[in-house]
Length: 149
Image (cartoon, rainbow, N blue to C red; front, side, top):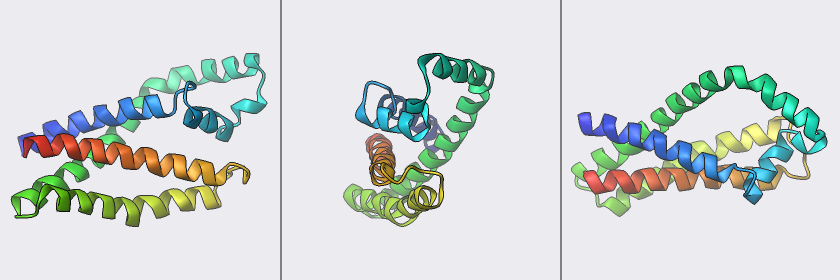
């Protein structure tokens, strides 16, 4: 169980790194995300004001995101660990992680985009960007877990 907890903590860190890179302003996905948030309609001064306004809550927001990422990593690590220790090959266990992504993550993100306040001009791009970021994150976490189980 200790290994699962440690791997889940490492997985949360991996998720934070991948998310930071994926949604940075240097990437097309980051630019899309900023457009989704409406930053493209703000002047540089308004953007700066929004970021200054958000700074006091950043620590709590990152802590909350780390907790959510830990839960995602925990589920991924458990699937890989239980699957491989139960006799499944690593690739079959990885397939289970992909199956969970397809059946739970994709519909959840899709519903959020479909029913949320997303600009219809970017809805499909945002949908694919978000689900692919999660898939990449899950596969990297699963790969790391597979090295230790």
